[in-house]
Amino acid sequence: MHEPSTNHPTILPAGVTQGAFLTFRLIDKYYGIDAHLVREIVRLPEITPMEEAPPFVAGILNLRGHMVPVIDLHLRMGRLSVPYKVGDSVVVLEVQNHLLGIIISEVMEVRTFEKEEMEQTPNLGESEIKYNTHIIHGIAQADDQMIMLLATQLLFNFSDSVTEARNELEGGEGGDEPSHRLAQRRSFHPDCSLEEREILRNRARMLRIVQNERDHLHAASSSEKKLALAVVSLYGELLGVDLAIVMGFAPLRHVTPIPCCPDFVVGDMNLRGEILTLVDLGRVLNMTTSQQEPTGKVLVVGWEGIKIGVPIHEVVDVIHLFADEIAAPPARTGFLDPEHLRGVAPYGQEMLGIVDLKRILSHENLIVNETV
Image (cartoon, rainbow, N blue to C red; front, side, top):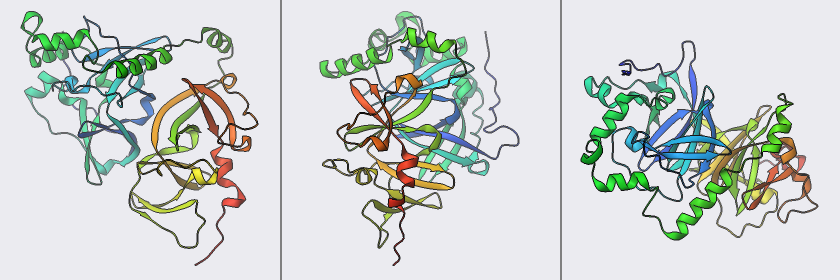
């Protein structure tokens, strides 16, 4: 039987002074995970339970032909599971070509922590070994939130010792386990409504679409890379933004208006000691802004010394597209001019507009020359 190490993994490798973490909320607690290991983020689909999997595995997800185990962090850390919600998401991680999904409540932001901002968790002795709680290997303080930093490699540990600990916490193996816990294992999210069930199933259908012919075509040209996109929602439309210029996401708060600026300049925001100018992309693009203005998150983008924040309604997904999956923009998409787009691509039953954000925000019309 494999015994987990009693030593905490180092939070950062030797010589590295800072690290980027995807931070997320799980009910009322906040966690961080190495952002470089995040392959994509998808909205919670229907997940297929597996009878012989460890108790903390909610089931498997067919992600375009790849069978991805999805874990419930509550069970993984020795707590009782909490009912899932349609608004939940799955963060898909990749370590050495192995995939793993974790169910979360909400993506918060991508944040860089300096080494001195992080501390290792205290040693919990025998209880730590027994329940493998050392998957939390560090703690960082972010504003008024305490962020628990997860040891990603240890999340992939499905050893017997971890399974035994979970069985004990859930009431014992086999016939000793409460009937309602067994029922939860055999049915994913059994308490959801028929409408919610259909939403989850539709998401699962879209995620398991395999484009075999396209994959075979590109296999012969391994040098061709996919375009990584952050999919965001803005005024009811889905926009794709090149992930190469995305520096992260942050909560939208404490905005200070700037006098004598065009209406598309929302104001300034203090982002961890740095002043970030916010630009309302909806106004720049003359989008229909009948919906309430964004109040939740800011998409932080940067290139060539430029750093700008774009308020958005929601972070929807992270996807990867081959060049031939992107079509030329039509004469008019209904909400954007072709000059603003790099192209369009189907996303579920909707059309995704891939915005040329560098070109849009570098346009001479957006340069503010006014003075107070």
